[in-house]
Length: 254
Image (cartoon, rainbow, N blue to C red; front, top):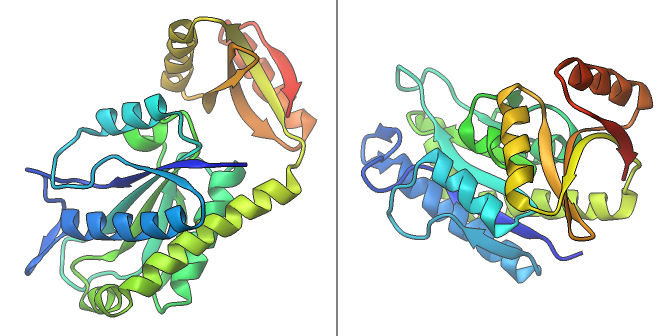
């Protein structure tokens, strides 16, 4: 299967992100996104960048860009910061929720960076982040160390190419696992539309109500579905929640 991945270099333009000494987060984010993208492209991945120059985009624009590109994954690059220099150090990956292939990919990335010497802060849920909530595909946000940590900065500078390769290898390894295993998931479908705009309206309503919804295109239909569960009982529970919220539902498998 050919994958399309949108890589997002966080911040940009008039938004520098976090700043420490001579380091600006937006520059580190762009350098790493391009380096990871080059490795992915060399391995047959269709890579699309939200930016490859120093421009600013709102989080909503980034999410819309990824959705319109029809991407299979969205990965955003950032560097962390804290109130006091040297207060914290380590890497973490943020996801909408700890479910599905995005969670496995996030775990793999954290582990790969940990092997390079970064402290592993783990995978954390951040459902309020626009680029994780508004994207219609599995989405991750990588915090590659604290920009105001001298220890993390030394690792970032001295092992930059290794960091890029470790992240790319973790992504590629996760995609290989997905292709080989392909487990059966139960999903709750709330609608199937020939018109994409109708599907989008239902999707945004579901997401605003806190449901982990997405759109799947099959046979010229845009299917709005919620969740991906290995256990039928979990799908049944979600179906009941959706029905209580006024949706017509059917449980499907994939």
